[in-house]
Image 1 (tube, one colour):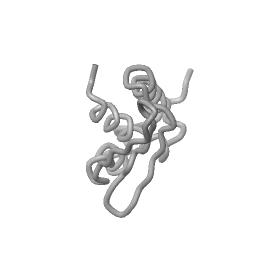
Image 2 (cartoon, one colour):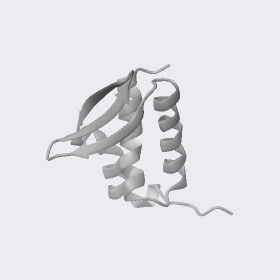
Image 3 (tube, one colour):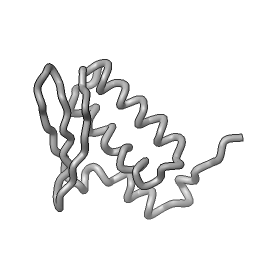
Image 4 (tube, one colour):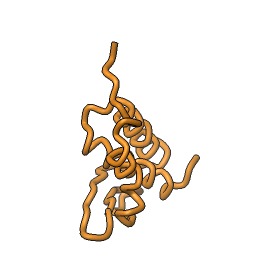
Length: 96
């Protein structure tokens, strides 16, 4: 099992991609996989994202307690920025 912080980081990194590219099936499947891990392995619920000028904040309930993790924007948006800078490498193929 990955640490909660690692799972949140991976989930949030791909979540920002799916928010920008809602038709990206691979990103959607990956988000679902990490959401399942957050819920089933780490016992999270009511997961919410907040963003300010420098950080992403992930608010969630765990063990009957409201908690929060934070991540620098530049760290979370690496994948999204790579997709934007080289879109030809990240073509969204339709289902056959």
